[in-house]
Length: 84
Image 1 (cartoon, one colour):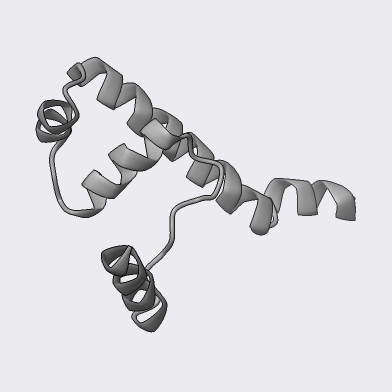
Image 2 (cartoon, helix red, strand yellow; image 1 turned 180 degrees about the horizontal axis):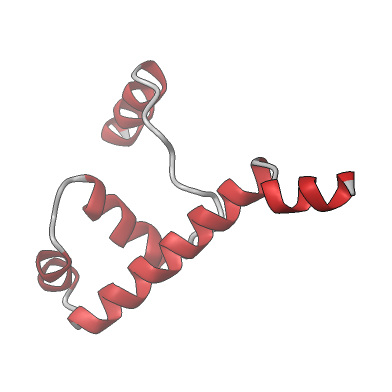
């Protein structure tokens, strides 16, 4: 608990990006290990899952973070279409 609190405080103080809230528990574990610098193969060994499963989780994480980013940023094509 203390380590989690310490980690959260450091993230806030140093403004490190927090993971999207919509990650599944498995995706969150992979995300946390990616943040520590582990490779997908190391993550697979650490979590005792296949490398292909790790790659799928990484793909889902990218989709969710990209989708979240797109929701906060206007799409230039949509803005242009609205003007015409």
